[in-house]
Length: 143
Length: 143
DNA sequence: TTTACTGCAAATCTTTTGCATCAAC
DNA sequence: GTTGATGCAAAAGATTTGCAGTAAA
Image 1 (cartoon, rainbow over the protein chains, first blue to last red):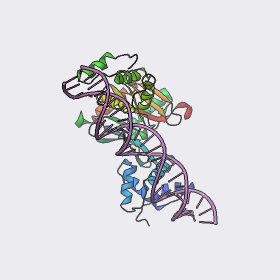
Image 2: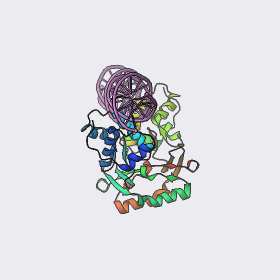
Image 3: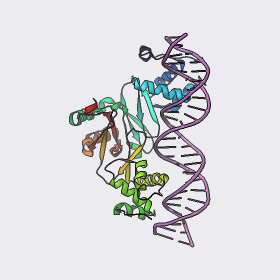
């Protein structure tokens, strides 16, 4: 009953290898995450996929996201708006500068926080998972 | 109907000055935030205050926190456990290294992130409000 | 006296869960 | 045929809101 789907070979292999099943719902949810330019919420994935497959249930989205998260295939970021957002872990790591006033999000590449990461390990023996990070503040326009 | 209360002159002055009223509930909520060593949730404030004043309602706690937040008297931090935590904005700024495995929280003083803050302003014109920041990762024990 | 604040109850919103059915392997 | 996945509905947990009564100034 599904439609077009762009399988991500690596992800599908990871799932199959651990005995998880490749279902149309999972394929469509994965596709929605891949296609999203960046951060996408469970509700947005749900709405997006329903355009092709109205039968999808929101709990399936949450269960799939939980699975992908545990497998390290997607990462989540809390942008402070009361819902969690996801992005493909395969994409290059990046961070988010979130403007508290206008909500604008500036992406920041991983390298920009390398010094911070190094300092935390050296001084606190704390291995920061900086792919989960959102930094709040004010953007240039809202200063 | 309240009990002892340790008024914080600055905060009380700020409230009165803007026409907000000084109520026993607000005094007790403020006291609870002041007494908390660090981050405290709405539910914890509620439970703490109820020891002295059983009549308090949780919605009053949320409304007071919202007011104090807008006035810049308290700051909030999302430690990733599904509820927001607060601390007095008057206290010296600090940050949190949150272990995703054991939940342990290491405090980090503001100075440690000054280089990051400078870099974000210089390179992105983004004024980070680092008092709202929690960094997730793994602590030494959980590596 | 005026009107901001509170308590109460109900509503919202996101995320989770139990269970019977269904479909991937 | 097995058993993991899905849909449905209901639950859970945090936070918000409408409203009428209460109390701070």
